[in-house]
Image (cartoon, rainbow, N blue to C red):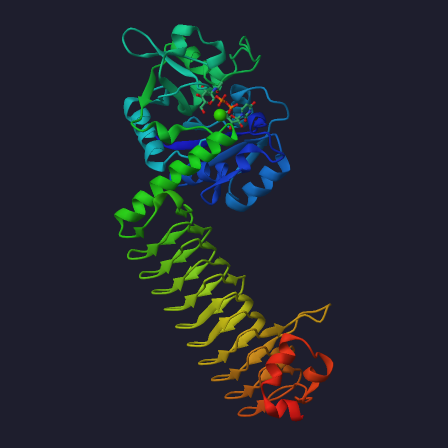
Length: 474
Ligand code: UD1
Ligand code: CA
């Protein structure tokens, strides 16, 4: 038996989220809720993937076109219930293979658990199989009602349940495998005789059973996997649980995490063994961190590549490449297009964007480096600004190898500072500096002797000055 079709139900409004964006587009751990579900489904090699969209349709379709371009979206105009959504998804499908149905709001589901459900379903030749779990607080979930012989009788929703049924801890995950042909037949028989006036997919199980079908309720060990996200508390809860799972895996693989509670590594990021993550660190998006790197405390890396042995302290970096053994921080802001060479440095209160910094070059303090190429072994003095914006357009600055840019230089782009050149501190450099030259572009100093005694007599400055006979004479 092969998996023919996967149906993901994602049309609900997510009313309980109180959000202007559709529920399934809310994110945890670097993926949307829908993204997590599609990721789990990815390895199952289904022939068709159908996603039922409704609320916020355009946004969800746009997202699907990016993360699962092979999927077909099916539009459910009005919320008619999970059964109605499944009906729509199955329209036009005539093949009889297995259909897997799941919700777009259960981000903790893992591929192995889905594969295990399918295995039970196929091996046992069941008409339908539903994944269940024992939840310590089953409130809000459909309850699994079993008959005396232990077989599944039906699923009852919280709001339709009697007190006895509400006392059941075994809940419906919302994940089902069906014999496609039998499902197609039974789904037409659903009735909306429940408190919400909706067609419940859960009722299909009872219909199939009454028609003589065999139903499996597959209890999985860890209820965490089936957690649904319906409100912001559950969103935070799932995010924290996923954080813990990921941190646990990382620590097992040899990553030091000093404070797992405040360390967040997205499921989309990669961290190698022998990396140290200090408190308050978030490794987000498609970031990768190579062995021996030390990140944090209080550092965010989004879509960054950090090479072996680099240190990033108290910094915020997006779309940056941080070379082998490079030093970043504290209080450094690296923006997209920053490419720090091996053993280079972006120090305290330095902002960079679209800047390539050569091997061993240093920008140690209080600087802005935008739209620049810096060669090897160069030092950029404190408080240097790469003046890249003329108010309309951005311009590029090229700095050669082994250059010494004096503190508080303004490098007004477009400009080139040649290999081995210097600029004098406090210069506003508006013209190229040839290799080996020093660019001096500042007013010449003049001292007006005795000025303080004449103009500020009686002040503490004048008193201090008067102690120096030279000054008095002047
Ligand atoms: C559903 C199940 C419940 C189960 C729980 C697991 C039903 C009737 N109830 O309840 O037994 O314990 O999931 O998380 O199936 N959706 C549509 N169209 C609709 C209605 C819903 O696409 O017309 C989608 C939603 O976007 C959501 C999923 O189906 O992704 C489940 O809907 P939701 O309203 O969250 O159902 P629950 O009350 O959580
Ligand atoms: Ca739900």
